[in-house]
Amino acid sequence: MSGLFTNILKAHQWLYENTDGLVGHRLLGGTPTLLLRTVGRKTGQQRTSALTYARDGADYLVVASNGGSPRPPGWLANLKARPECEIQIARQKLTVSARPTLPDDPDYARRWAIVDAANRGRYSDYQQMTTRPIPLVVLTPSSS
Image 1 (cartoon, helix red, strand yellow):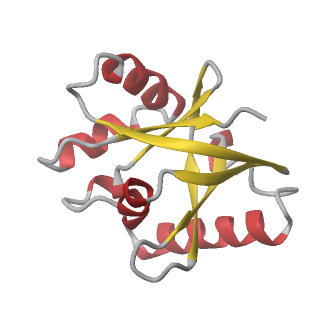
Image 2: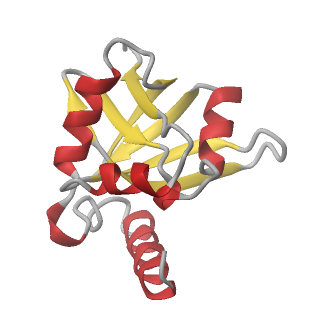
Image 3: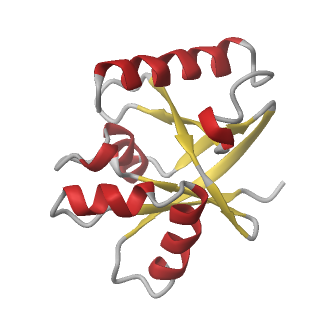
């Protein structure tokens, strides 16, 4: 990713977090964005990532693309170590359970099509940039 784009994403996340979701739910171009709050598997510290998402029924879908990098994003390892986490959509906060999936999952292709369409084909572009299969993460809200 270019330095300018990275700075724009950081500014977007800062606005989202510091307005408690009043600003930031929609990324540039209107793509919906959530805040994913995980706990660092090594540090035990809270980590927050702003990620675009799509819906599949009650589930939220995010993609561990890391911009097409050969390495997955750090938040994916945190979710694997501790799948219970929190997401924030606008001002609503939800406890969710994360389940990373790969292309061998029977619902992967269907869900991939949903998130890729919501992101205007960006994830398919990212998949072409790397040889690693990009995980799709299903975030299922906990029952109240």
